[in-house]
Length: 254
Ligand SMILES: Nc1ncnc2c1ncn2[C@@H]1O[C@H](COP(=O)(O)OP(=O)(O)OP(=O)(O)O)[C@@H](O)[C@H]1O
Ligand SMILES: [Mg+2]
Image (cartoon, rainbow, N blue to C red; front, side):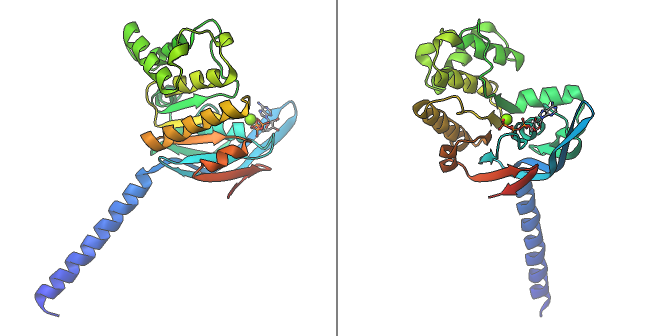
């Protein structure tokens, strides 16, 4: 080999190494949710319930991931741990590259507000507040200033979930599907990168269920958000990028 060929070979090798380091960094930065070795033991009375056993889960940014499994298998427990609502007995959770299991309570609360939108099964709307006010409260909690500003943003979010004609309705005057869409608009307040939903279609008829599913799909695909959904609903499998199954506290990737 001539000297220039050696230099060229070196250059290519260095270049390859740099490219591979960059590819690794990109792949890592695209991991929105990484859980490792999650164990959860509940203590109730003198009994211990070992609900999660060594759960590992990685979800790429922009993916829709379904978490399925029988009733009582630990789905809500795992979702609550991934959202930082519940502290696991053991294991680590990284969201958007940050280890939430190492954060102080204040850091975690702040991180959650900035980055996670949570949709609960029972909607969890304030019954005395209108659709818009329910979303405005979330915007306020997330630090958005100015009541007229919040009102404008709430209306834009409600329009996004196709409720522009129900802005001033109270929850009791909305259908189940409409309530769920208010809950989705509220979860979108502050534009979080990760949306977590616990049985978002469970209480809905087939038509409203489809509308909610389509909305969740759009949220993931059009805005590159990561959406993690706990569900029993097989209709959601059509929109999922990945499905995992929790059984007896053990997570299996389908
Ligand atoms: N705070 C608690 N103390 C003791 N046991 C609990 C507690 N919360 C949940 N469990 C138990 O942990 C297990 C998993 O509960 P979890 O709510 O995570 O299940 P799930 O898969 O979400 O069920 P479902 O599909 O019915 O919502 C259940 O057996 C439940 O009884
Ligand atoms: Mg549950």
